[in-house]
Every structure is written in C-alpha cells, then in structure tokens.
Length: 191
Image (cartoon, rainbow, N blue to C red):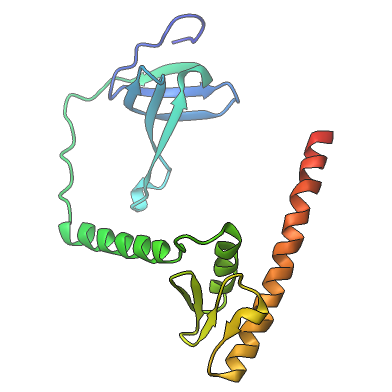
C-alpha cells in the first residue's frame, strides 16, 4: 500500500510493515483503526517475546504514515483472552483510591494559591495536613494565614524553630519564582 491521496483500507488483524514520515519503521498487527481521529493502533513485539517480553502498543495518525506494506493476513483464529485476576484488580483499585484520597487531602479548601504552594513545599520534607485554613506540621506546629514565620505556633520549641527555618526558606524560593516567570516570558518572546 502506498499512502498518496487514497485512504488505507485497514483490516483488524492485518500484519503490516509501516514507515512513518519521520523514517521510523514498525512491524505489527492492526489492533484498531478509528476513522474519526484517523488513528491506527498497532500491536508490536518488543523483540523479547521468547523471554516473556511485553508487547508494544503504537498509536499512529494516518497522516504520519508514509508507507504501509502488508506482510501477513489476519489469522482466522483469535487468541482467547486471559483470565482476569480479580484480587489483583481490587488491590490496584484500592491502592489507586488511597493515593487519590491522599492527594485530595493535600488540597486546602478556601486557601490562596500561595498558601497551597507553601503547603506543597513544606510537605516535601515534613508531614503536613490541613485543619481548616491552617497548616499543621508534625502534628504540633500550626501555621495560620498569611503563613509567615510570625504565624507559627507550637509546643516543641525545637520543632517550631525548624519549621520556621523551612518556611522562611520556602517563602524566599516562592518570591524568587514569582520574579522568574517574567524573565522567562521575555526570553521566549524575544526568540
């Protein structure tokens, strides 16, 4: 098949050798073709199938295909789908839900973008959580709005001083980062 002005007639299961407009070459079996997006999905071997290797799924836009040659027809028999391990699926789902809940708990409700940035920066090195609009660090130190060093309070003086140091450092980083985007935009515009 040559890709000039005519559309390819894609058949599921057809084995192809494809050359892209970037001179990449792939061999694989057509898994799917979506006419609305003109995307072709190929299933390709990664070259290590005899050692339990995986298969590679390649999604190509039809316009990126320079040449396609049929190297084999579709097989008449279809491989049976493997059984699903429901326990593994449930474990993965549970793990994903816990991760999503953990990520959601890190988002402050009704706080400014700056407060959220401070929270993210602190939570990289110290355990933090939100209690209303206050940041609680190490389950002991409270940082009230507007989240400056003066707004820190807690019972452990050592922990309090450490949190204040980190907060001060993070505030300085945020101040620098606020200055940088303008410089980056000027650089991009001048290119």
